[in-house]
Amino acid sequence: MVVRFYYALRAGFYQGMFIQKGGSSLIVRDLSSKNLSGIYWAIGTTLSCFIAALIGLVPEILIGWTIHLPHPLLVVICTMAAILLSLAGLVVTLVATSFIFIGWMGCFSFCRTIGAPQTYQLDRQTTMRLDGFVLSITHPHQQEVVFDLNLLDLKDQDHLFSLLYKCWLDAECAWNQGLGEEIEAAVQKRVDHFTMLV
Image (cartoon, rainbow, N blue to C red):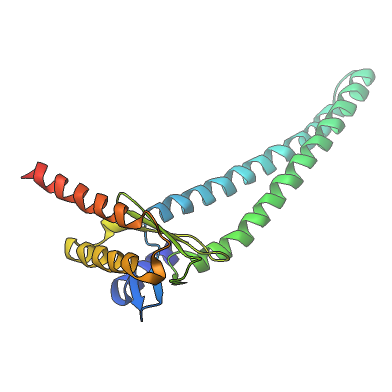
């Protein structure tokens, strides 16, 4: 998954991260560093399920130990208890193992979509929101993309803001009611930031 993400970064560097195709569609790659945290959580969850599956098998070992107890009554009682624990542990192992396989199947889909270009038609079903320097684009039946504007140079940010503002002014995109104000707020925030630095 990490190799796939770095491949997407390379493709984004050479082919572009945010492309306006014609006047009616956008091609966007989600190359935010949050993808790496998603990979971390996927691996962490799989590892946790693997540990739970191993712990579920531990009671099976107890059955072999209980047979060697000195008193016959202790052998019967402890073996019965170990069998009950083994059945409960087997359930835990089966559930954890099924989660591992489900996670593996999800990883294949995640690998294909991580950093992959998503095409969005600029129509009434597409919604664009700008929260600070994070642009999110949603469309029914498509994966939501989150585009971190901090990944761009200042010149590219200005160009993107102008494209978004032009898109908002167009009649086709007038349904994004708050986008214009969000663009102005983001530009003003950047101006204030540089004013403080100076």
